[in-house]
Length: 331
Image (cartoon, rainbow, N blue to C red; front, top):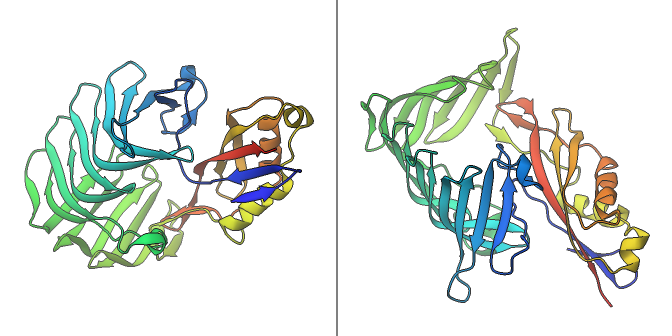
């Protein structure tokens, strides 16, 4: 979206979650630094991962993706397209532990899981196999549709006992925060009653599914307060939708005088958190063009209206975003 701010100038805004990559200084490769939450940081000293994108050998071929732990070990390999400061994963993407054991093997089409995927325990043992359907439909309408649930075909517990075969069985699983979930799979999809805990066991929940679709859910906190919900996850929402945010930034961002006089062009990249009340907090400049361009971006975001907060199983949660503001003086 182009919004005229000053004579012969445009501002382009693109907002998305944490799937963002910034050009490095090299002409052939694109390098970015990521923190432990997989959010972009400006300095290597603040990073736990390094992402390198190497152009493909053929025209219109995807970049070769290599992500490493800051200590040099391979974290993730695969392919990705790069456009408007973001990556879109394609084909096989493999993730590794520091010791070289696989964490996952996933297939992507246009940035969405699509195809056979495998996941592993820390000891390298196979945990599960699933088939991800990708998006249904084609073209622009495809981008507006929710992704259908994946089909779980195989599941093993940590001792190697198979609990799900050919999409049918009973599962009890636990993550690194000791949160668990348990319930039945039927023909590859969650079915009937499921229960578990989340947010580091601060909450418990019960849910009812039919053919993988959530029918109803209830969360309970430590005081016994219940919250009902119909979606497991809800992203934060800006008032009147994202086009309204684009207009707000376009109408309120002003080129600093020096930056305008020196014809500064490029991307100012900001990160922020939408907190549990919908306020924008922890606003930081990830990439700065100097001459006050980053500070102006921070000022505009601080003045933005509150969002509708994100929720996990009906409970408000903090959600991080990264936004590039593309400044392009013409003429």
